[in-house]
Length: 208
Ligand SMILES: O=C(O)[C@@H](CO)OP(=O)(O)O
Image (cartoon, rainbow, N blue to C red):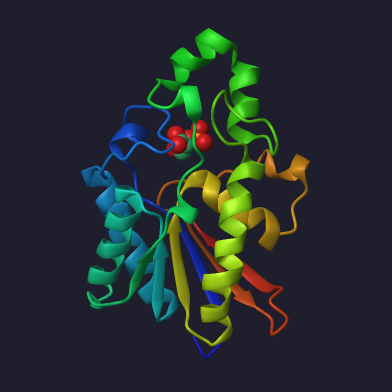
């Protein structure tokens, strides 16, 4: 892949809470063996498409840090700079944090729980809506990540289902209605190429 303004997004590999079907939010479980394998698969994919990563950004939570470190190691670049910041953390799930997702549906009803999980502006009790999450993800993207991309440092963001949905909503110019059906799987990789004006020239999606 030639010089360009590249931004790769990856959701962390499977965590123990993902495996247990529990709301995670700001809890800090580690990756499972499958999660580590998903991170290794991202490194293989990046090698295959010839995207040489210069910088990695991840959240302050262990599951993205472990994913970032595994990707860097498997790329043969264990000293790749990794910037961790809580701005990229998962949405705060408030009272749902730690609960089994099926039990939450039994308690609050499936359609209410689904609105908390996927709508733009409904916050779970005591937690953050996607809009709240976007309000901390987007300034970090503009102030820290975008400048790296625009100076041709191919940048990899390792983040979470909802912190990435907040970013994808802006990059793909999705409406609050369209973001409802946007899902990002663990280990999924999205590669954007940006124009000089920072808009998206093209996007590629790689699922494991
Ligand atoms: O539990 C969470 O923190 C997230 C991501 O795993 O769950 P959901 O897919 O419901 O937003």
